[in-house]
Length: 316
Image (cartoon, rainbow, N blue to C red; front, side, top):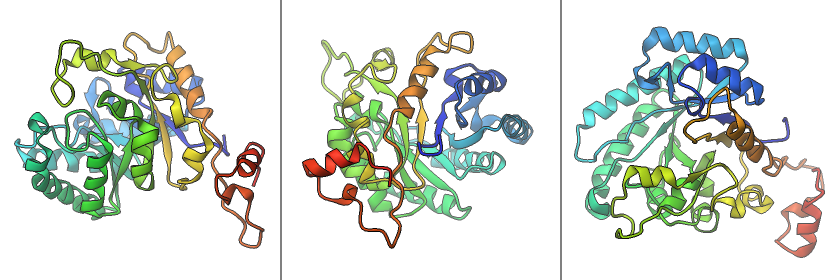
């Protein structure tokens, strides 16, 4: 796996208990965990003792924590900001104890899609979050999500570029883009790739809005969940395994985390885990930096037919 992307997974989509999560990750050869919950409690609610226990179990299993998948920012924009700051500080404490530098966050639910009205308040809050994270050498990775400020590519880019802090980057969730009517790799990736440090391998089809107004009108949660598919079986496929998608924007910090989001699957029935992790491993190999004295590889040439043919067998 040395020439592939570092792969992690959402363990609580396998089982509530951390021990069961670890067992399935090991069976599937997944060496990273994006920790959202353990033993039925969210990571920000685990407290020092259970976080230290989790860190010990993961260390013994040889599994690293790719990110703390916190719920920070998954709250109403008109709600109590101090409560979200407290959750962020709990997430930062968790990151320190779990030996990771990344914390997944969101950018607040916006009423009725009124992004312009609440933009200044969102930027104020996200700037404060970034300042907190930077003070502890941590990085916040913003995940796009339905109904929050950063729901589509334009708003995600506005968010990270307006805050302008190295402590705020992008966690690219292609399935969530599908749910808001954005083509992930045709429309969102070109706008966001240079800010992306974290990618979720997750799939979806368009939300069934029969008889309902178009997005951003609210659809029932059950409709959103019904649109999620195992990796490779939805509308995300186009672009995710194209070499040009990754080659032009590769960076050493990029991580790939797998979503096993199908209810009813667990350690006793790990097929989606296998399918999703195999999907992630089918991504093109990570480009290797060119040797400073080597003639430039044709991979760096413009996107000509000759360059494309070369990339199929390139080992530089």
